[in-house]
Image 1: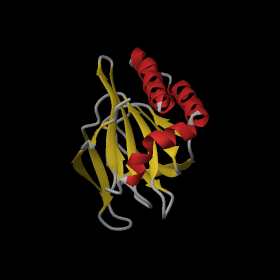
Image 2: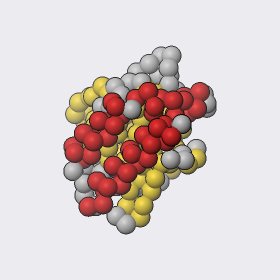
Image 3: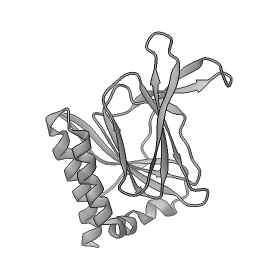
Length: 192
């Protein structure tokens, strides 16, 4: 059991250490986190198995937080085929990495004048693969668990508390994007 706890502690420590500068090198953080996920995949899967078995829908679990410089580290549980709406991150920088399963991330840019969103690309992430974004009010994305049958788990590191953000919905297939304010909720705190 000690090794299982060690893996989460290591991920937490890497994120906190890199974010100590306030404006971290996200590529370097992703490399170090990815190395741990690849090396300790079995231990992480065992430690996080209760989250996979919960079957309570999409959940956000807090792993760590700090106020100076601000950072939050979360693990998210994704039910089969679950997807988020297109959403922003309230101008925070962030890194997202798959721990178990596979997810798709569609990236968008928002025109600051018109509010229109344009898809920039997509990434497919397996265990240890990550993507990141700099703190930009005009970045948005949509994430999806690629499996129809299995839950996925992801690690998220943000440059602050993502308590409030905007989700974007198109009024019709080619219509304007409408921003809806959102509040994020935590399912609980993970013991590391």
